[in-house]
Image 1 (cartoon, rainbow over the protein chains, first blue to last red):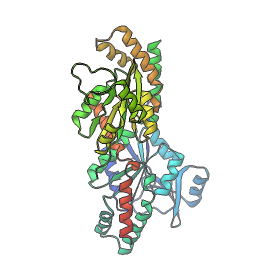
Image 2: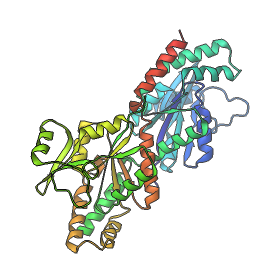
Image 3: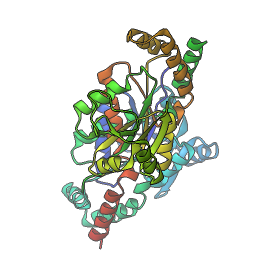
Image 4: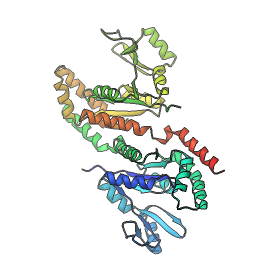
Length: 208
Length: 208
């Protein structure tokens, strides 16, 4: 029987580089799958249903809420965003470690429903580096940078609710670190109950 | 400031190879230190005080118990064995990850006193392999093998109280696995409270 995958929630300050880390993690290793969110916002050019998002109408989305088909959901700027349970369950039972990129409120809801979830927080080496990275992108106005930094300050309040903290100083090392954390999580005894049962039974058999 | 080390308790069936794994772990990496036990048994040829054991008289040992200078202790065949707290504390504050090789009763006592301890259980790929390894040593009588197997059956009852299970199939891979588990444990957010405080203060400062 294939070992069940682990659900991993990744959060982090905007500019900490979590998107890049996850992309590289999926490039390097084939045990991961990215969760695909459902949303009521309109598809943008080049986005495909079931790849970037599962695109839903508002009534469809609200029906998913009512039927508890979403692990978590939130509303931003008049649009719903949520994590369909079926997709995640499917990948986990295939033995894939499923990565969910959401912010803290969602992360804590997921952990409450599924206590075996691993919560991972990606942070920059320092607040100064974070600000420099946001400025360095060259695509954000000063207002946006200020609001991102303010948001980071709020998010930092919840950092200790995460299981692991990963510092994104050098991308490649950080990707390896995340991978090792997940590999190590697979060795937790509560994730290996069948293995424990198996050796117990074998020992009883041999000692009979 | 140097990051504090982690206390790691390693247990496992006799014949699972935990001694060899620990020896190889200390050979490969310099962040580990083996805890040195105190005992009232007599030193054997070639054993040095403070290296294999801290050799104590019974009154000395009982004074250590009374003064709570031992993390855990037990009595086997008229001799005391225990883990001196001072030595472990010294190594942990130097930033070393300290390995303690004790059996389950001791392991659970340590975890109770120091909840941040990592409990690691080393197991063979199967009970059959365990028996083969015990026979393969060629040094044990059939009676000893039977009693070790029986003891393994008892120990298996407590396996799920450990944090991690490691299968010792191939030594080198197993050593790496143990090392990665400890590296990952260092990323736990409860072990990085100072780092969290630091980035929170930096963000407050920059957002002022």
